[in-house]
Image 1 (cartoon, rainbow, N blue to C red):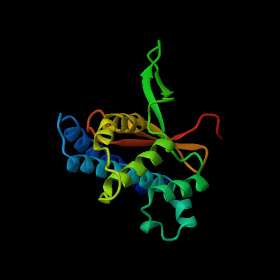
Image 2: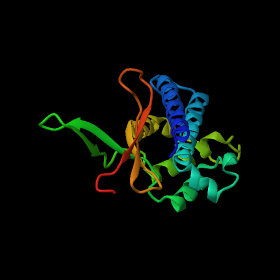
Image 3: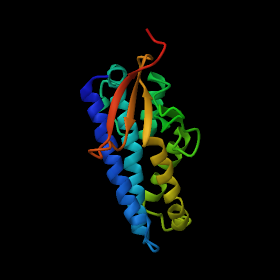
Amino acid sequence: MIEQDAEKYLQCMEEIKARIGVIETLGIQNRVTIYEIEFIYLQFRKIVELIMFSSISANKVEYKKQHRRFKTHWNAKRILESMHEINPNFYPQPSRQGYDSENQRTVDPILDGYLTKVDLVRLNDQCGEILHATNPYSREKNYRAYYDEVRSWVHKIVNLLTHHQVQLIDSDYQLWVGMQEEMSGRAFYSIKRLEGTT
């Protein structure tokens, strides 16, 4: 993965952070209108797409070989399917950083409570449901139910991305990403060679 593609990955992460901020600003209000709930789900839709676009940037060389018109791709579900064929381990793997008893840095995988691939598809579907105008002859949408899930979706997205690894097509390397560098507050990355590889 070249540095330019890694920078594009970070651009996606920064935009996700900004959109999460918008959701949190609206989501903490006690009373929101259906239009505000729709606006929140528009942000979620964009976040789903950004997660998939970041996956393209982490695997761009191979994705470009498979899809010559990759610059026009936008459908999150189709990108997900294509990415799985190209690199089955493409999806971000969340982790938690800490220190052991000897004050050595540790990185432990997060095993639940994050946005899984199944969750991503479900959230994408919910966004599609709520962002279409309601046919006056169909059953009314339960906006309260959508709103009640906002905090859970934010929590899962944050848990997925705060600190995560992405397995690159070259199985010897991973992209390690943090969403907030201590000094700048910006997303950052490093490319790690896996232990035991030659």
